[in-house]
Length: 234
Image 1 (cartoon, rainbow, N blue to C red):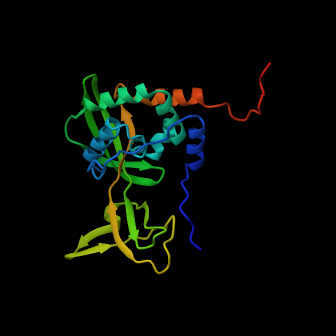
Image 2 (tube, helix red, strand yellow):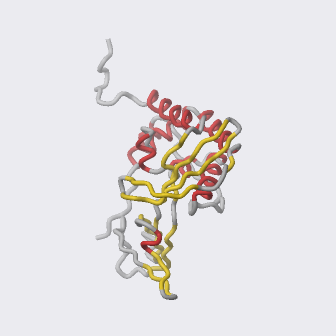
Image 3 (tube, one colour):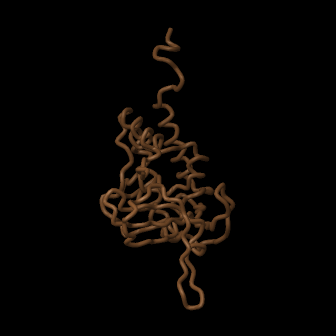
């Protein structure tokens, strides 16, 4: 028996739709950008805001960043639906941002273990700030199974999965699959890539306020939980 892939946030997105939210959206066309390096991750996020691609925006946030900000997919989606001007201001802020000096590399301890990290210094018309990015590399497995043509997952590090030694490429990929292709399915290709995600923001005036406004808009609109219909009414 093969487990079918089930979106973990399906229930949240249904709730957002019931509240009148349009949901998260992706770029209509591929931008030719990825998050393979800290610099490209910054360009990816800036383009995602410029194109109002909210799914690309949200998926550029590290899980620990989302948790620290008190956000989830439902709140992010509701915030976009209820306060679009907040997102437009964030897009304008990032449109005017430029890299300010070389990227500083290091290691950051996360709940998933130590990860490669980077501090990307930015300058905007309103001041300066820093994106703190963490690399959460992933693999993508393409198969001939028509029901599950692609499976993806996380790897601890790219060097740990792929390295060159003695003139040979050595690939070691031992990872649990969220969905298992049919037994007779052939593997078409495997790609392993970096994925630099936004883990924190330092003193970037405007962006921190944006996140707070998104959370506030969603929380004000969300119905109170745990109350029966009519409870609390005079």
